[in-house]
Each structure stands twice: as C-alpha cells, then as structure tokens.
Image (cartoon, rainbow, N blue to C red; front, top):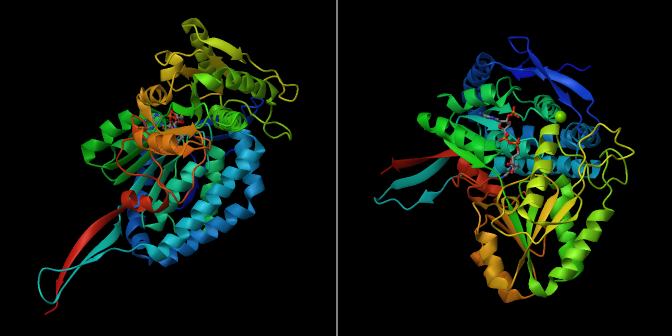
Length: 484
Ligand code: NAP
Ligand code: MG
C-alpha cells in the first residue's frame, strides 16, 4: 500500500500524531493509499511556514513568479495521462473527463503565468501640481485554500495559480476523498521551483484542519468551494479575524427548454449537464423546466437517451458515466430518489443501483435517473442532490419558466434552449444566476471568464477565475507622491 505525506515548510512529513486515513477507489472500493490525518498543531505549523515565506515570495518580481507557474503548466501537461488515471481512480469520473480536467489545470497555470506580466495598478490624476497619484497591487498574504472532491485538480489550480501569481503563500487542504491528485499537483509545483514554505499541503479532516485554517489570525484570505453548510460555518469563524473570505457553494441549476427548441439539442444539453461527471458538478443541470408544447416529446427523448448511457468503471473505454464518489453520496442519491417517488414525481427512467459487469460489483453505481411531473416546491426540486438525477418541471409559458427557474435559494448556473433571440435575452437579463448559458450546457466554464454564483450559491464577495481573481488575491495601496 502507498503511504503519502504532507508538505510543510519545504519538507514531506507525517502527521505529528502518526494518524492516517485511507483513500479509496469508488469504482471498486479498493484502497489506493494512506494519507496523514494532520492535527491542529500541524496545521498551525503550515500556516507559520507560509507566513515566514511571504516576504521573499511577494517581493520576487511578478514575471519571475510567472516563470515558475509556466514550468508547472508544462509539467502538468507532461504528466497529463498519469494524472488523469489517478484522478479517475480516486474520484470516479471517466478517463476522458479526467483528462479534460487535467488539461484545464495546465491551461489555468499558463494563464496565471502570464498574469506575472500584467499585474499592475492605476495612475490617477492628482489634485495638485507635480503630484503622482497611483495604486499598487500587493499580495494579500497567507491564503488558506479548502477544496471539494468533485474537481480534484481544476478547483485547486484555479485557486493556487492566482494566489501564487500575485505573490501570496498558500496552505492547501484538499477534500479527504481525493488527496492523491492534490499531492501530485504539489509535487509538480515543488519541481517547478517554488521555494520552501510558499506552498504547504495539509491533509486531514475538515473539522480539524479546515477549522484551524478558518480560525487562524495569520490567514489573510480564505477561499473555499464546497457545500453551503460547511461554507457558512467557515464564514462565521473567519470573520472574527476579519479574514477576507471567498465561498463558492452549491447549485440547483435549471435548464429551460422552450417550445421552439431543437429537440436533439435540448436532450444533448440535458445529458451533458445532468449526467456528465455523474451529475456531480456544482453547475450540473438538475431541473429541466419545459414549455408545454414540447414537453411530451422532450421527456420521451431524454428517457431514451438516459437508458442508453453506459455506466461503469471510468478507466474502461466505452464507459460514459462513472460511479458516484462514495458510499455516502450513493446513499444521498438513493434517498432523494425515494423522496421523489414519495412526493409523487413520476419516475421515467433509472432510480436503481447498477451492477456493471466491469465494475467488480463493489463500486458505487446508480442509474441515470429522470423524474417527470416534478412540482417546483418538491424537495427534489429545491435541494441539491449532487447525483445523476434530473427533474422535469412542466410550465405553460416563458414567464412561468423564468419564475420557476428563479424560485429557489440557489443561483449558480442556468441555461435556456431557444432560437428566439428576444426570449433568450429576457432570460439572460431576468435570471438570478451568476452564469447563464444560451444553447450550451449549464456545465463547462471558460477559464478566462469570471465565475461565481448568486444568492446562497456564494458569499457574493469575489469572483473566481480570469482577471477577476486579482481582486480577491491582492490588496490595493494608494500612493501620493509630491515631486514639485
Ligand atoms: P464539503 O463537504 O463542504 O467539503 C468541502 C471542503 O471543506 C473539504 O475539503 C472538506 O474537508 C472541508 N470541510 C469540511 N468540514 C469543514 C469544516 N468544519 N471547516 C472547514 N472545512 C471543512 O463539500 P464536498 O462534499 O467536498 O463538495 C460538494 C459540494 O461542493 C457541493 O455542494 C457542490 O455544489 C459544491 N461545489 C461548488 C462549486 C462552485 O464553484 N460553486 C464547485 C464544486 C463543488 P473533508 O473532505 O476532509 O471533509
Ligand atoms: Mg477517493
């Protein structure tokens, strides 16, 4: 069995208690390795190491930091196949999905390597003669990074890359279900040339490691992606130290299908958005709101497409949907399917466990599932399931579709399928969601564009990705210089 370590102050170390936890493969329940169950004391040591490394790293010229990020991008690219296989083994998504995610991570590092040349401030007109008035972007400080399991390399990368590019040092705590992809990413950053202490890697329980990071007065910025429950607790704790906080959380994302939509496109977008990544994306389509005139044809075509999907071990070719990530998540999915039935929604397809011939019989597989006749007040229409379950909500017209799409606590992503330009634009303007997709799946993001949710999907403080990231990861200083 492989035994892995944490990386603190430039050294690979065990937990000071010696305790470990196991990482396993959701496709067959095999153990992949053990990782340190770090203590609060270990976490504090990591934070102190990041603090100590801050002056040197933040004073390095930004283009020189970019060189290291560029090297990291190259190393991710060179190890893409290996990384994709590790990712599939610990998280479950198909190899094709994993490879796409790894290449996304490579491109994120490329993008922020370039930011080394662009990170600048503003020059403003002064109020007096012979005065230079300008702003200077500086690193915020020590950044704590807490990530979920569903994108084991893309999400850590879209937080770590800008943090480092803008001169911050980092303590990174990955989700306990996916520590190995994270460990390889850290190895790559070290090989690329990060000085000791600039990145620290601490695995262990959210309640210990994550809680210590949230409550530390030495942490200047905390960026978290995960569930609303955990995020809210982190916010309450971090605010006591006036730590800057960014939270990106759950979704219950609608795809609106209007009468004029092309049926094939509507179905393809639903399958990609709802069943791609086994439905385990924060931007996954989980509600399809369909106008009456097309609803029967749509429901039948979606059910047919769902029946055809090949479910199995994501490492095997031909498999279109991998297992869910864990036994807990499987239980959640099945519980919600039970709730949907008892609420009176009509189960069109799926709802059962899958025993794929190629899965070894021990993995966590559930069928792609579609409910029809879902009422928007039902629990399965209001709560995030985070599995391959789509609920069809039938509506009379565009206005009712928009109202139902907005009638929820979340506001992450939303889509509409139509060729009616007027309705598409009214949807884009009227929807309460941070990401709007017109004739595209609710999932999938451009790394150069700002990303973040509205309402309970986010702390609504700072956007992630693209050039927006600089706002969270830097502080702005204003300088008045009189030279007359
Ligand atoms: P989670 O249970 O909230 O965990 C997220 C991270 O927080 C993990 O690293 C976890 O550590 C840690 N954590 C747990 N308890 C903590 C505590 N008390 N204090 C500090 N940290 C703590 O979420 P998940 O199950 O990994 O991910 C699924 C959720 O993420 C879904 O709700 C999904 O919508 C959301 N998500 C959102 C986005 C977005 O960008 N909006 C993207 C992807 C996913 P352990 O793993 O050790 O428990
Ligand atoms: Mg795992």
